[in-house]
Length: 598
Image (cartoon, rainbow, N blue to C red; front, side, top):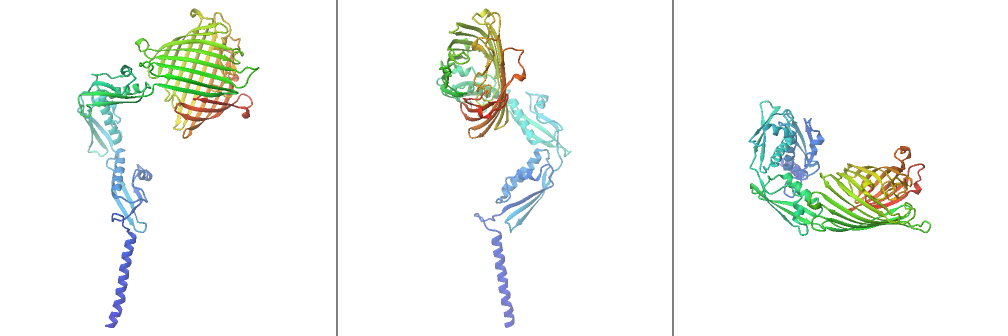
């Protein structure tokens, strides 16, 4: 008996220790979370049988991540997303043939091996419509994004459904609904599609009210409306009207409220709410003209001076040379008053006019003080959103030489730039032709043509390549003589040919013809916050005849610049050198200006 007890007691102790050890291992391997459940992590997820998508693509579609706490609900949602991704690509029978989870207590994680049965690729069989009366089947088929024989793509089916709804909306059927139904056939590789359409009633525009405007008259806004009371309610016209009113530049907010749309009424009233912006402003400009001149300007303007969108601008510009030449400091003083009438004589034509007074004393004027007084007026029309053309008349009087210019001109502009201050895409094309003298009178007889084309290519969000070509030609006739000093073509400076002084290149003062050609290229890069850099190259020249211009006579300049982008345009600091002949990097010219060169 004692022997038996002697063997039993050690066995009981050993069993007790083993039991305790097992309980301790369980507690270490499955620690409890705050909610009392096991805190397991998702381990490795391996896909088997997948050919359409790679392992990385499937993992990328999942919200669950390896190493993060495992959540079974989120994991099941991820599996549904993967199956839906297959279905969108036409694999309607895709499924998980096997899902094997392995618990690793040592790493406290769950590894999964997921076997995918992709099934056959399903193609679209017949496409049918039900309930359509306004549009025929053939017309709806033309609007589809899918065709018979295409791989079944659920995403494109949904886009097609939305497209049909939009097609009906443009006919005033705002309450149209479309339900797409996928119908399996006996062939697992072919699936039919049926679009069930409820066309709904026609919806018309009821009343249109304008609210929020205090200074701007209602008729200024009403002229921009492309939708009228009683018409079919067309969403595209609503959007177009909103954009046209906003483009007036008088409002910070333009929005439509639609009364009756939520209740699905046959007549919907529109309320156009605007928030007025400040219609008057004060601006300035500054710059440096190498080698020793500073420039600046001040202007005041009003965008709605008489409540009918009339614009008035008063501007003064000045340039002053810091060094004197034979005791004379060169300078220019320019004064302008400009006026724009957007509805000239209550017609769709635009009228504009300006008067100016200019004082000039520099090398171009042979160091004499020239005072010029004149003005011009024009009438034109915007034919499209991007194209406009004007005809006008200009008169100028030079006091010191008792010289007058009386000329008529025509100008045209096509502008698709996405921004006036800092364009990233689009182009700008301008052209002008002047005819002076002859039946118009005056002291000067000449014909002048100028043209300019600028193009902007957005390489990516931060990089833009821009280039420009510019040309001008002038020729006197009849009474002949040299080109008038105020009309003489000049090149050089911050706005055209950098590396050269302002107006450094010009034609012979006795020439009866002038020709100017200039080209520019810039690579503009946005770096950080409001700063950017630009690399540029310019080339051009001015000739005293049309037939004597050759490429070998072109003058070139190149350099780099810093840009500080502001709401009124970039502040520009450029350094450029002449590239014609030996390049001297130490004696380049610095330009400081507001706004791009083009």
